[in-house]
Image (tube, rainbow, N blue to C red; front, side, top):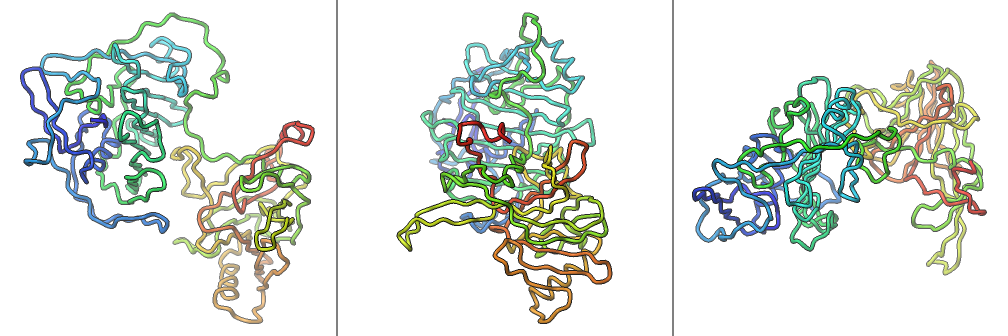
Length: 537
């Protein structure tokens, strides 16, 4: 069979020390779903996973092709119904362990794992790995079966990042599982935060092929989560349901150094825990912490800000992927915003949260600040006019606290955002269902939002403290609280969803600006003389 995971409905017939796998047709409706449960069951004794009856999915996405159904109860390991199975020996080049035998698996350590080369970078001894483990520094453990070129699994540990990652490989060297575990408040256990399983349809399918079926499981410590099944791969529609897991299935005990098992043992068809042997490594001087090649695996990072300063610097050349060349022009000043409370709110005014508070708040000095927008100019062929047209569009809106460019940019977090849980490129920010955001004085949030709703949604005319902005900019409405003097200014985004809020700081940590990208971050193009834009800046 092509998948390295034994479907739960398969049967195992043991004859002395020989095991024969009976598999169902890979197109069976339950196969991928059952195998997907192994993503969150990669720990000793948890595979095959225990089954649950799970109700209809909680999450919905309009752009997905969803199938609203109850999840079937997986069939236990045992005899198959007549005609439902085919008798075949497993085609996976693995050793099936029988009674009284234990396969030897070699465990080696390294500073990092090169994902492109599928090889360890800078092997280290177990003693050195233990030192790095105690210090919270990243290292990898590589599990290999003698005679097999590809590893069975590779584990990246970085306690300083609250992270343990696992890649499981098939015999062809393709990654089949990505398991992301997080160390939170309890030092004795790990949350199975995020996992993805790929189900290659044949040996000729490339790693991470877009048409490869996959299952993603997203879990949170409060018991919430989401299971996304894409049977036709990326872009082929998806089914989103609740994972329906118990607390002990969301978490696993944290093993001490040297006591980690082969987590994917049963995924690889091993009926008994293998015998682990530590690989011998010649000691050598280690490189510096910053010398790790870019192709090496690293702990996940949330979304990064990109070159925000350059969006407000006239003459910079960028591209959004649709237009090959766009030129940044002078920022457009739209008005000012009064923040007498000293706490700036950035939120979606169209969504009222349970506590009635804004999504994001940023402390600033009480005062009145400039509102402007970054703009680019570009040309394109207009089919309607059958001519070349030049236009200007906004890329970002900003509350400018200080004229000096920011030395650093950081993503603002809300009160419920825990960066220890962020996966690769995850964003935090404000949500909108009406393609609208706003800057406001958080101290007058409730009266300002009430005016916004009365003026825009209820359509009250001649409303004191409310005005529409009709100057062609992204800014649309303004409200003012007479009692405090605080103001709110709403701006348009290019769609619904979550928008990050980027806070720029000076060298001494003072806030110099707050920016929201109304669409994605454009890519910088070199200067006209070939100099990289970031170097010129």
